[in-house]
Amino acid sequence: MVLTNFGLAYVPQAVVLLVEEDLGDTKTVFFQNVVAEALKTDKRIYFISTKYSTEDVLGQLRFFGLKDENMDGLTVVGNFTDPLTLLDICYKRKKLCDLFNRDNIPLHNISELDIFIIDSFSSLFLHEDLQNLTEALQSLISISRETDTTFLLAADMGILSERSERITRSMVDGIIQFRNEYLSGKISRYINIPKMKGTLPMNKMMAYNITNQGIMVDTRERVG
Image (cartoon, one colour):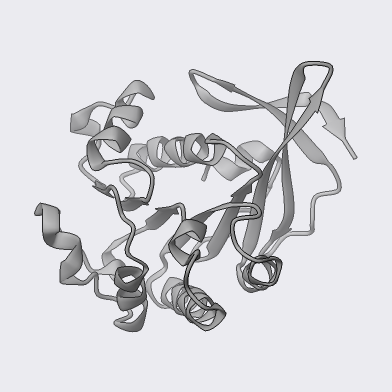
């Protein structure tokens, strides 16, 4: 996975990873990186977007350089706003329920997938109680182990309650944070990976830039 570019020697599979950001769409660019790289190795990907339509997501990927003939392993569900549907997936474990088929999108068994992206996971639980959130997370964790599926969950920091955010971070297998610093009219961007299953926590954040190639890590600069 693209995480090896962030300085990780080992990237675990069949895990649930939380991708956090203070504000912005860097995590969406990160997911585009993941999709582009995964499709090159014939991975099967399910991409749920709560912010964009299916065509918008596909258009962004085309802008990223992917062509339609290279996206056979990708299924996109746009304008997804119903947490009950996600909970239904979790409770039924390996089955994607029929509510996904409102746009005649092909359904798959989760066991047939390699990567499952939810952008953004946190927005689905704005008005859900903590029990629903924790049950959904626990189900995704269990499914990841049973099916060898990697889940990537996007979250905007500060959207959920502080307690919900802390519990989410404690439950997931890994955390990737995109952080911005503003000084003298300049934006400095850093990647922080405070937690990753099977690896020691990184001691320093990594500087990065966003280009038309995606997220490019600047290996010359480190901050403590």
